[in-house]
View 1 (tube, rainbow, N blue to C red):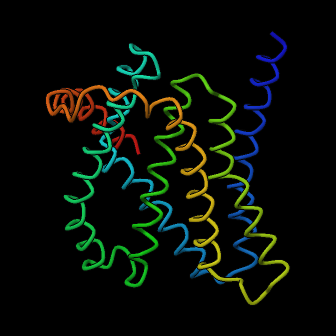
View 2 (view 1 turned 60 degrees about the vertical axis):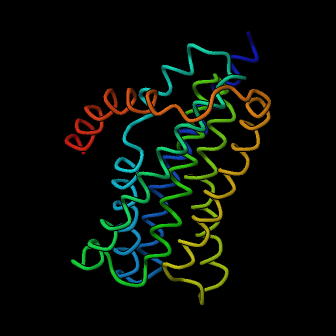
Length: 225
């Protein structure tokens, strides 16, 4: 009982620290780097946030309910199907990405950062959701703090100690490394309890059913944002 209370309290503290870290980063960036770089960071963050909704299709609203109905050792085949769907959506998303740059919505030269950060942010977010579904709240909070919290302070420390690195690319590099590390740590944990169960192959009927249920959720989420 005490362990549960400790885990709950520690998780809440980590989540609060994550929110504070993001806020503190924006304040410090405004003081440390040019206004144009702050604007570029904000633009990329917002664009990635919206893109995650589109490539994710809010499919987790369906897959999470399905996972709850099975032992976590059998989640592998569902995750495999979700990966296939995500890759398919990414391929369809590429032409839209071209128009974002062609229309000048995103500045030319940021293509690598946008795509790379979109991938690691989406994957780490889905890993976080799987951990929460599996009731591993502590690891989920640690992963969240790693991908959205602690790296903010690393960026600030680097810029304070090395003024020559006070630019948006320092922010993007550290952000990418932190989210990538979150993907690796969470991915290894999930792989440990899912790789033994082969289950069924790609089930397009399962994917279609999930899309029918998740698309209305996607529309609602985009409307709210």
